[in-house]
Length: 289
Image (spheres, rainbow, N blue to C red):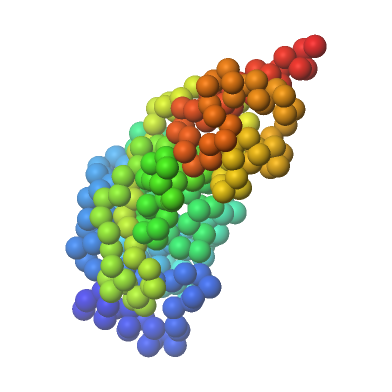
């Protein structure tokens, strides 16, 4: 029975329809699944966390190669199907949970980071918050292989000056090296989404590519710059709550030779780091005075 036939049989048997609110689109292309697994470069020492296991098509392929797969599924009916399918598989542990509410630190703590990988076809409606959550746990993860909306993948790998370049581009590049492995057209899914998809590989960095003295301030500045991306950088930072006086900010721009009239989308990560470090130093000096 093909993967498409298995989805149709499940829907007929349960009287279900794919849940649009949960972003359910089942990948029914066997070569595509194998490409995802191959991209993860799994070994029999690897622990894999799968987010949104669905009907377990990817779960089965992962479990055939990894030491352990923890598969998370929120939908109760799908979770029951997974329990039936994997109840006797010693390589698979199932969790009926919401990934955004799960304590990842606790879950990942039992496994060595170099052998910990995230492989998932992410629900598109919560892709960005899931990405940020995974990045927060970068020290516990080696690699992520994620099927995401193609537009999100393009935003992540976009260079400065590109219309897709933004806070997510910088956030991911700070923690990981990103590449788009392949594109997946809508007809490889059931039901077919209205957008193209891409398989994205994130290899977590041992250390960020820039030195930042205050990470929270760095990301605050990045977000401020893109919250008003049509405005000049100077104005965007001031109106979006970066805690510095106008004259002090102008002095930092002058010292770094960054034109305050530029837009945030033209700055690369090195320039954002220099700006954040300059503001951090000025804030520290103000406190000491």
